[in-house]
Image 1 (spheres, one colour):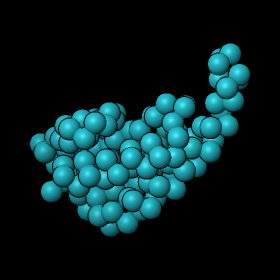
Image 2 (image 1 turned 90 degrees about the vertical axis):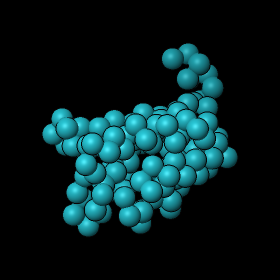
Image 3 (image 1 turned 30 degrees about the vertical axis):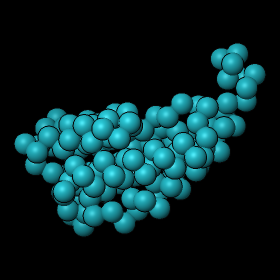
Image 4 (image 1 turned 135 degrees about the vertical axis):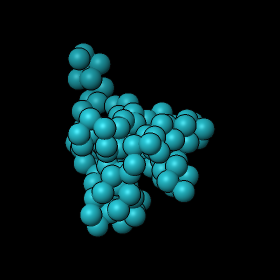
Length: 123
């Protein structure tokens, strides 16, 4: 807590959280397989859907969250993917929680790599 106060990290979280939200909206706002983008500050999540208009989830047998994790890691990006968010079985999402010290250039790289990983996983 001392470091957070001393280095004014909450100001960076607010500024970079707004940048992250904006960049995610730009990259995924009209993405065919993103049903929702939500979160606060630097803790953001993306809901993955097979059919955006109906918000229908992907078949759990596809293990989409595991594919996204693999694709992201192959691009040097660590994310928090999960499945079963609708009923314990269906529903995939990916969470982002970058460090409080992140800068705009690093956020841009995160969004680019995540976009590439999701596109590869759903292809």
